Amino acid sequence: MVRHIPREIGVREITNVISDAGFKAAPLDTGADDGTGMPDPSAVALENLKKHRRQAAKRFFWSLAFAIPMFVFSMIIDMALPVSNRVAQAFHRKVFQKYSVSVIIIFFLATATQISLGLHFYKHAYKSLVRAKTANMDVLIALGTTAAYVGSIISVTLQGGAGEQFFETAVFLMTFILLGRWLEAIAKGRTISAVEALVKMQPDDALLVSPAKLGKGDELTTISARQIQLGDQLQVNSGMRVPSDGIVVRGQTEIDESLLTGESVPVVKQVGSTVTGGTLNISQTIQMRATAVNEASTLSRIVRLVREAQSNKPQLQEIADRVASRFVPFVVLAAVVVFIAWIAAGATGHINSKWLASKQSMGNHSDGMDEQEPMSYGIFALLNAISVLVIACPCALGLAAPTAIMVGTGLAARFGILVKGGGATMEAASRIDVVAFDKTGTLTIGKPAVTDSYQTESMPGEFNTWLDACVYELESQSSHPLATA
Image 1 (tube, rainbow, N blue to C red):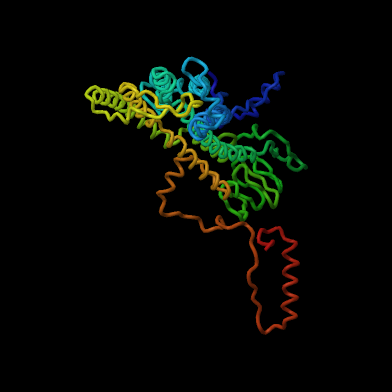
Image 2: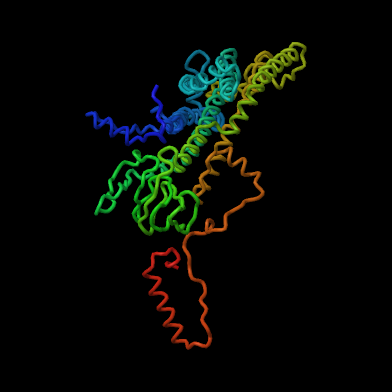
């Protein structure tokens, strides 16, 4: 293995030697910060986040294709429409043994959802249980939706197509969870856009200053910013961005550092002052010596930190996963206890008969609302056990937390605030009681204005007017930031 030590030899020198030997060579722009040529994990994580955002949107909108018709059939046709409605009568007509059109459609919608969307949760639940030997939030989701789906099949089958069912519950649970994950991906996407904007602030080229020859001035050569080496002397003209971190060795200028510090007023830089890569030179030409290049620069380190923060799992999800690892066995045990308790209550005659009797919700509505046969206490016990598993599904947490993060990061972005760590940062910010700002214009809008002027009373008004005009004329020719006031 060949290890590159930047302080010993630079990338440009290596490529020049290879080129002199008759071969073509160029720096590999992979984001590697150690010269190994290996891809930067944070850059890979950023690409994964973009892919995750697209997949999250695709899954959510795909779930709507099942959730919307499920809502129409299970909530509107089966519950909202009156018995006399012709549409309700048409869909409640029994077409296969004792199963109505509505039950069959709802069953196929739920089955398609379990196969196409549930597979995503099943895979993650399997990895958590088998590989990680623990249970996370995906296990609870898979457990709750599967219980609702399988329990509905058992109930409807044993009661001849007219039993209580929770097919819509499984579909709606998945839809809400996928909505939450899509919102979470949107919140991360906003920070990704901010990161990409930071990356674009880095200039592509730089002006390399070669030592002056006898009778000639400095020789300037345009090189790629990726080829800058430690100790290179670079020239930064007015209007150009600083190509790397460094120290001013010639000239004096004003630098706009709002990119990094939020400073609205440019900062004066002179010989010996430090400059940061990506900041904007707005005044005079300067020459600088590079002290940190490429991935070692301040801007690159900021980008890397933000990328790594966005690739981490939100703190609330980590808490949910930790709770789930202990909660899943308890939920399963509770469901078993509930089932056994109701079986025992039914066997000893301690279940109220009114609880077992219900109006037929999906029978032959062409003949009106008929009383269905009371369900057995075994089915009643099964439905109660399923209810325990369904309510354990963390739908509220899976939707509420990403929604809060999306709204919070969105509002912050409107005010120019970059939330680096997503939900974890916002959660930590709630405990802040003291905020310290520097003494400069960080909190201003960067538009200085003259509010008052004072003249001596002994001078005539015409003189003061003439003096104001002279000051205005002088300031209008100046490039100083305060001259625009």
